Image (cartoon, rainbow, N blue to C red):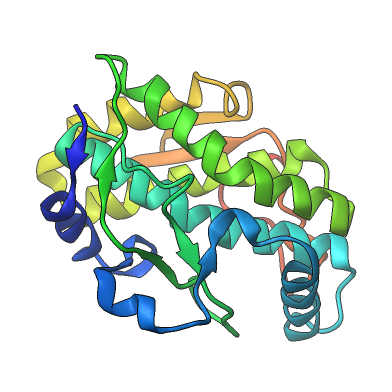
Length: 233
């Protein structure tokens, strides 16, 4: 399936939070929008330093990891939401834009939402789009903040778990499709081996995630281990 995805994206964007996305040509009048794959170099260094300062002066490695987790959550939410609700994959790797921000979810914009052509293997197609979209940025985080790829891609896997629980909470009608897609994506590279879904009776959805790496949040003053952290087990 391929082609215009405006209606589908609008439905996903209505979930808000990390599913949020600006669409349409009007946003193009804002000169601060930049291609997402160019979130590297000086702009990335500046944002890492901002995060480090906001977290009490933590080392750049910790700030870089947590920034990659936040940014990844924006991408995984869009891919999972569109896949679960419309059985297609949004074309993000060469269409998505970002602009500088000081806090909260990273602002994202696509002028015209489109779907990626794919065969019947939706999880593999979704994982490939995650890889193509996030790899330039995660590689830059690794190089500029000395964060290992195991940590940054583990953050992507963790963000997929968070996106699934948000989707199951807001759209329980999509539960079987969303869970099957999320599980399938964790079995595909680059997420294979980085974590998996588990039963979590304490959460309203009954779904939890167990990652095999750590995002380093425990090293933030006053922080601790996240619910899915390998250190918590």
